[in-house]
Image (cartoon, rainbow, N blue to C red):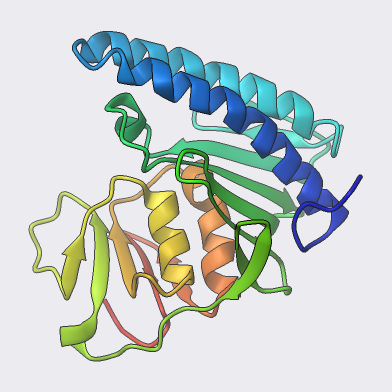
Length: 234
């Protein structure tokens, strides 16, 4: 196959599966916009669309590594015990409200380590990706660009995204996007300096974890998930 983005053939096959799924998502997004007078109908529609998306993309991914296991927030499937695809839609609540700030998070893990990661926002047409020990990139306008975390340290200059119900004091210029996967990608790209979240389903953050690390950032998962540019403490 012709390479679509800079990276391995396997990375490109995973992106091709994402891109194929995205065309259906764009159609679904238009349908959701027409359902805004009934949030219950919109939620039902998005739930069914998500299940359809999972089935579609997972079938394509099994052509990449047929014996791989599968993990999503809704299902898991055992594989050969070596490889596993991890998939989630991040920002589903935004999708329900016809807010384009949502993304598909997709990772390939091998022997317990994430090797390939992609975060794709189909309506915003944004793709962030990374391969282990190869750095992180942003892809747009048919061009891949290396990304790095910010170098900011002054608290007055910081922009931090939050996804938490905690009432603890928040630092810097606060942002709340409702899409943790894109928040992690934004930390990696230097558009945010940090991200703090209540614990999340691992399927939603597996890709973002690798992208942040490959861009030079740090991420920890304890009582809270905290990702930073590596130069600040939250």
